[in-house]
Structures are given as C-alpha cells and as structure tokens.
Length: 317
Image (cartoon, rainbow, N blue to C red; front, side, top):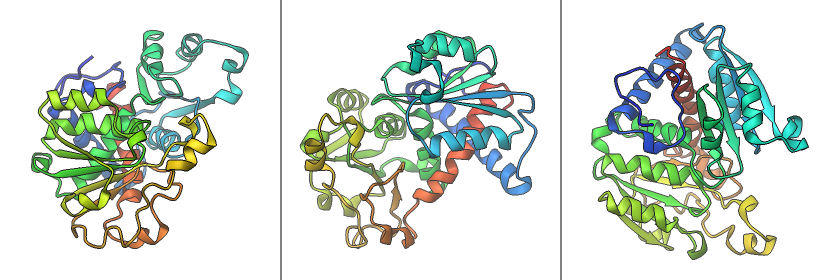
C-alpha cells in the first residue's frame, strides 16, 4: 500500500521502499528531525506510553534490533524481544502462527527473517502494523530510509539538491538487501548510481532493469578507481558469508574491495562514506578518523528514523 504524504499512517505496514514517493519520504525525514530534537533536548518522551513493540528477529542483528528497541523505549513504549532460538519456530511453528500469537500482545511488530517475502507473509497474518527489518535478500526499507536521512544531513539537508549527485555502491550487491532498497529509494531523486562489484555479486538484473525503466542513469563496473573521483556518496557493503554455499566461494571474493585511506585520497572532500554495518574488513579502521566517514553518524540516525516510523504507524505523528 502506498503511503499518503499528508494522511494518517496509523495501522500501515512498512514492507518496501516501493510504498514511498518523494513527499512521503520527506515526511519520514521531517518526523525524524523532530525525534532527534526530542532526544537531544530531553532524552525521551511518553509519546508511545502504553504501546508495546514485538521485536522479532530470526537472524542476528545488533544495530537494527537495538535501534528499534531504543526507539520504542525513548518514546515511552515497551518492548518484547523475540528470537528464533527462544520461539516456537524451533518446534516447527509457522511464521503466520507466530505473528498471530504476537498480535495478541503487541501493538506493532518488527520482523527480521531470512526468507525473502516473509514480511509480506507476516503482514497478511495480522491486523497490527508490521515493519520489515530485512527479509532475506529482499528488502530493508527502514535501513534505506535512514541511509537517505544520513545523505540528506551530510549533503546540505536539501533532498531536491540530490539531483545529479553520484552514488557509488560497492561490495555484495547481489545479496545486499540494503542496496536493493536504497537504489530504489534514491531513484526518486534523480541521482546517478554506480554499481561496483565482482562479476558474481553484481546488482540483480531485475533491479537494474526496473531503475532503467524509471529513467535512472546507472553504470556497472568492477573497477572502483574508475568511479571514485566522481562519487558524492560511497556506500560500502560487506560480502555476506551467510549467503554463500561454500567457504571456498566466499573466500574467492570476500576481499575484492577494501576501503583504506589511500582508496579515498583523491575522492571529493565532500564525499559521504557510508556502510550499513557490520563491517568485516571492507573498510579499514584507519578510515574511521576521516571526517568523510559517516557510518557511525548513520548508525545513530537509525534510531531517529525508527522512532519516526513507530510514531507514524501508531498514529502519533
């Protein structure tokens, strides 16, 4: 369901970036600004007092899981964490039945699941809003929104000014749900996108074709040096070991691109260097001191964006 930029989002699901247009994306960013102000000014509020989040994670997570929990707690709500090892999915319970159980206790459900399309399955099983926190190699819409919020903050806080900017995505683009969602979301803002990956890990053809049909300028290459100087945003992703069928196949590509200080020495001084994290060696720790490294600010922004989304789908923003 597309999201109305001006109407209420109470009860809405957030399953895909395809639900967003320019104005509804702007609305999320505006509410995220309000949430950041609340945290900076007073630490917390009681906006969602009495509301309960079921935080359901069937894959490991640090940032997404913790930021959703922190977002709910900062807004005065409660959280019930659920993971695969402690749920009845270990006994063979279906995802639909798990969600039907949780809707009895919770007002909103956040789901991370290893199977593409699982968030839509969950949403069909409940009347409560479901937020997709990553469904296999499918999408990660809340990550894309926090990435957009970070780019917006780092590049002058003007979404209209993103037109003509060059975004270069590097790493495991085949399996990286973060880039699948971000590429689609950035297509709203007339950017150029470079895809830099080993041949075996290129962006899925269906996404490239979809964006081409929308008029997005895209380039595919295995040579980062060829595009680094023109890039305004460098979005680095890890090669996802858990998606490979063998250790040998993973080892063959895992160190294809490693960002060091030398890598970005000739890049723009205004470059925004992002990573959804965790990293496993694809950005050297020496880069952390470079002011262009925005991935820790990106991590913080995740809480503000998720506060905004929780408030919106619970009818409080």
